[in-house]
Image (cartoon, rainbow, N blue to C red; front, side, top):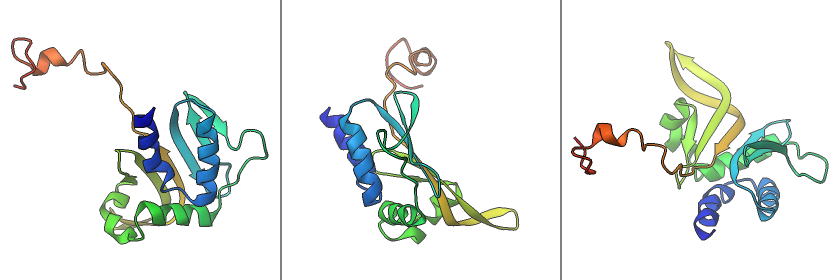
Length: 151
């Protein structure tokens, strides 16, 4: 639990305060958080144990604001969005702990290449997780004599 809690804190710590409170409340109820979706003018949604949920659960849906997206992006970039321009051109940011944040907004294109993303309107935060055994079938192809020595 400590490992998971620490891993999730890399995500909750960069959310806008209002969104952070809602997410922390849902985490207390248990379940494996897999994604957080923030879209301006749309309900805050999460994927927990493979099931999409609109938050908060027991009240009217929380509608994500432009200010919440801005605050979250500022926290994620440590108030230096320009330092993340290369990642943003690819449409994502990587947070501490390996979490990935898909970013959507107005794309600035110059000569067929993405220069920047402006007016960010949505964030899709994917929680990093371990999938034990997912490469088991590949091990024989990348090892010698069944030892774990890479070719």
